[in-house]
Amino acid sequence: MKIAVMGGDGFIGWPTSLHLSDAGHDVHILDNLSRRWIDTELGVQSLTPMDSIQERTRIWHAETGRRIHFNLIDLAKDYELLKNWLSEHRPDAVIHFAEQRAAPYSMKSDRHKNYTVNNNVSATHNLLNALTELNLDAHLIHLGTMGVYGYSTVGAAIPEGYLPVGIETSGGETVNQEILYPSNPGSIYHMTKCLDQLLFQFYAKNDGLRVTDLHQGIVWGTHTEQTRSHAQLINRFDYDGDYGTVLNRFLIQAAIGYPLTVHGTGGQTRAFIHIQDSVRCIELALKNPPARGARVEIFNQMTETHRVRDLAEMIARMSGANIAWLPNPRKEAAENELIVRNEKFRDLGLDPITLEAGLLGEIVDVAKKFAYRVDRARVPAVSAWTKDIAATINHDPEGKRLKSVS
Image (cartoon, rainbow, N blue to C red; front, side, top):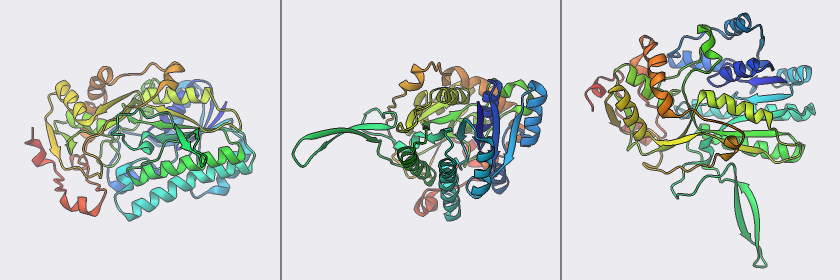
């Protein structure tokens, strides 16, 4: 298949591009390289040293004989350029990663909120609009988030996208139907993913676009089979307070002797998936497209759930690290349950990598190996969800106070 990977230079886009190219597909990356510019804005770099996208694709060709093509296109701004590219190449499938992906970054300031909404929503709509205008029957696979559901505290399992409901009619009868699970975003970033859902529903219903929406949990890990094959193909590893996911931040904290920073009670339960499983799920979705005219296919792309404090205790046992309890910069429930249905990918053959089996290797193989590149001042999470919360957070940029907390 000819596959367009929108945002193929990113944390999940890059290993997905390698995985699909290795499987024999003709892969074309479309990216505006904004994630690299955000590194410059934040004054932080990936823990793992990354070459340019041109060098990465050159190395891949030299190692495998396969080509991954790169196109510098901003989906949110370059509509005509995007449409012309799609018209010329007419891919069989489009995988859409081209969105600002960090909740803390989306909440940093009014400017960051505007950027996240303008970039994410415009990119998605431009893509859908162009596919419709060109009458291009490409399977669109979108990387969404478990965060569109919010975080349940009622003990009921979150279904895969659609909730069966009974509605009482004016005649007193009950009519059964399925609706999108009620959206409950916890940040501006998550809100844009909720808006994506509505865009997909409209274009699937109105224009017959074939769409698969993957509601993904927190991705952990660095390596996939392909990124391990050459040092210059390594994936990025974000550890900073804005882009570093909770688990990757714990890993680097353990590696450098920095206390594991748990915010609030640590009772936040989250869904997780390994990066290798993430690219496998995308390939499984690619092989199982919805029919034209069918409703949007939704998968919960996660493999296990854990409370934050339990993760911290697990890594502390493995590494001997201390745990520091800090104020929570987010506006969220102190404790939540999270029960998630994920039978679809398991029924398609996914055999997941578990946290217990893979964490120690990540600490040794990645975090400790590149610990010399860490800027300790960038480790704390300080982007606050409201001005009131921001006023209550004490930020120690050097982490000196944290070292003594156990």
